Image (cartoon, rainbow, N blue to C red; front, side):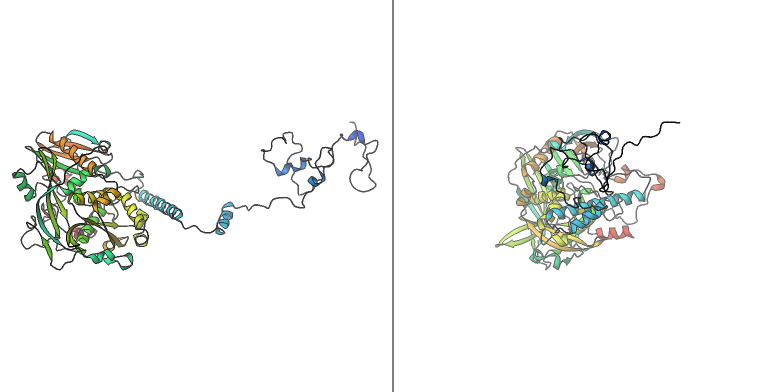
Length: 563
């Protein structure tokens, strides 16, 4: 048998529980010296039997509640203990228990705080709403076609198909345009054509609370005639009045090229010593871009009412109707030297006047451009010309600003948002007003009656700006605008006689110059052959026609597409 277990000497305490206060003679050999008895209760947590890692000289070390069993710093048994007051402890010194669910506790705490309604909070909410809407659109887009590659931003297409036989002559990055500067003297008016109606000043008092329905003007014709089809420009070219000819739409596109995102193209014809800047039939220049410079991508489906193409058609329709609705249509018109050169006899035309103006670019180089003004108003017994344009709101979720709520109280914020999302369009309107020397440019704020109804609109407000002041506000430098035009004219004058096309790259900030055949763009359908099974027979009536006139049939086209 093995040796029996020796319990040792256990002293008997006749006064109560626990070891006696005075050790007996036989018990001193079983206890280590200077080790006090540490009582504990069942609620204490014993983390470990012994902790050899404790370092009381490191105050930054986090304390574990379970280590309180080994904390003898305040015990009276040690001679180096603190004062008697330091050994005093509360009955319950533990911190209050924390709730198990952190988010619920945070929400309860937030409800006790006052709600902030300042601009920072509102801006944060708008950003969150835009991000949520963007995620929803991407989610639905990816679900609709699971095999299609997922993409965050839209892939823009070129405005014209680059044919393999075209020869690229030059490539100009937009970064070279920023440093250009050229000063031109005041222009001279060669001829004024057309007739203008007076502006109705009651529209300046429109607010979102007393909005007006946008009317439709189907009987008035609007003309988008290119440079070489203009009979007045042909006459001026035969009289050698200038060497460079263009329109205000083409010049403003060149002047504001660094702000453009979408692709565009301009046809350049070098004939003898003259230079003509033209646009193609059905060119993108006839439409108005919407949301072009925004960071929020638009739907890519062409049949979507919020796609880039659908919004461009809608904006052109709104702009034409708005420019005629804000006039006093009582038959009183201001006429000029000649009638509208593009209208037929007895045809009802829109209120517009064409100013054929000439600028001096060099000692032997002049530029003639056809500029437009849309209305006239008498101010202090002086006649002032106006340009009329309309911004359109299609869905507040895309812009983040609801016009009906913000136009009265925060009109500056609405304009700043439009300057961010439509910087190129506003700059082109300003450049056209400066080219025509308009005294005032009127901007209308037109919104859909409902975000899903792109046929019916209301006018929420009309605001007037002086073109030069507005150009300074949007950082549009007149000298830089003319510097861009002068550099492109000098570059094109070095080319041989022939036809060229200036194309803005759809994905890069640069323009390219291609040499094209002489019969290019005469019949666009020839240059884009389709497989026989995909070919569509042309309609019986010439809906594509009208080189000279494009009537206000935007609405009819939209209805046909929808049907």
